[in-house]
Image 1 (cartoon, rainbow, N blue to C red):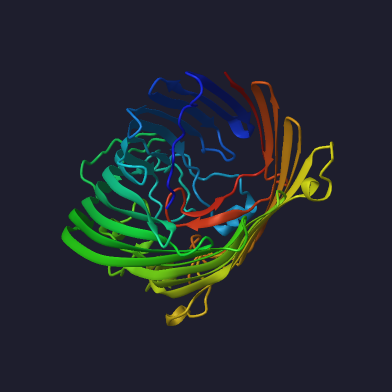
Image 2: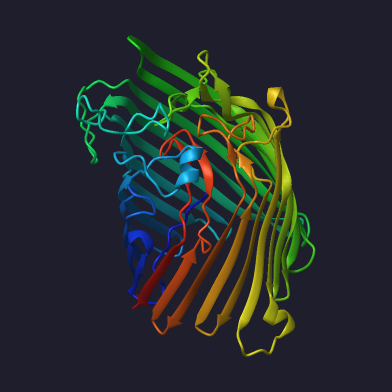
Length: 561
């Protein structure tokens, strides 16, 4: 989970404006404008961003507008409250996926011109912070999400190899399929933070509760038009399925950091989850209509503990172990825009994760983080290649088996000039490297010792940065090992969602120049123009192979006032 923290306005002046304009290959245009500042007890910040790109492939235009507005009011030394609103509007044309032959022949081609998606959302948030004393504070955050996802595309049950062409009989394309979703989610979290003295050390107690309630309406299989533009018109008002899902999650939690000495602390934690999910509606199966009216509740306790020991003032050894749980909710049994067959009897997944590492810095020129990890995953949900009674291959999403993921992750950064040439005047040079080794395999069932899907054994990123006064530039080499798209580790298949994902190397170069209040940036992504892909999918924007973008350039100008 990523905890996004939105930016606030500058604190030392009433208004600061930031403008960024970027243009690039394949019709890229991006315009960003923000304004923020502090006036008395009010701090405010807002931005608006417009993005348009024609796309590396035909039929891949993206138009997007996003924005945010937020204000915080510091009532007094104890009380702070805030309001925030963010918005996104977009329209995305999807050029479709490839089978292996199509990708190898021309990875810039497109065999779909009538597939479209839009996913607007609105988020309203309110925050509060109250400091009872210098040792105790209460934090509140509540948000409401109103969003949608609308898709109109050629029915992709035949895969990317089935062309979307005009029928000589009707002189029209086949009717497209319409799928729609509506989301209303509300989340509130209250957290109490208290520091106290124990054994002459400062300890920290955090406790609270998080409540989430979500409603989703999912409709799919509607008969759409034979046109090519974005059009959600239905020729028949009845969908193949029309389902309403709800989820209620109540999760109280508590954790305490016990500082046993100046160097050593332990942080145990407990989270109790109550999850209730429901499904109502209908699904058609040929001429039959299957009604759905189901409800399921779960009660789960999850434990975790973390340890940290300061080896020096700037380095520490750390270790963590925590339980995890992933419920199968009803909406996952009728997925959005998927060509895979779904196992209706999928079970919840659970497991635990542990890691041990050493991190810190040496003087001012070397930063590092080296850790090993072990992840146990029971009833892992994945993709299996199957064959039907007619000999046709298809993909099944189900509980594959238990899996174990173990490996090593490192991050190293060396400032060469500070380390070996501290008095230099020709600029600063630093090297950085991010490396991971992962051995992820199934440990039970018919796929025992097979590699887990989308788990390359190595990912290695090596870069160099040179900076001289207002100018800096970075060159990055990224290497990713091969992986597999399903649990059988099939190399090839008639189903393009299954098969090998070959190893690939990508080179990127970027730079920035700052002159007074103006900035200039440039970059080249995929410098060697490699043809590669990172995913085979049985869902939109495929199905099939989704190619990565080839060599692209960009140049941007910015100003701050």
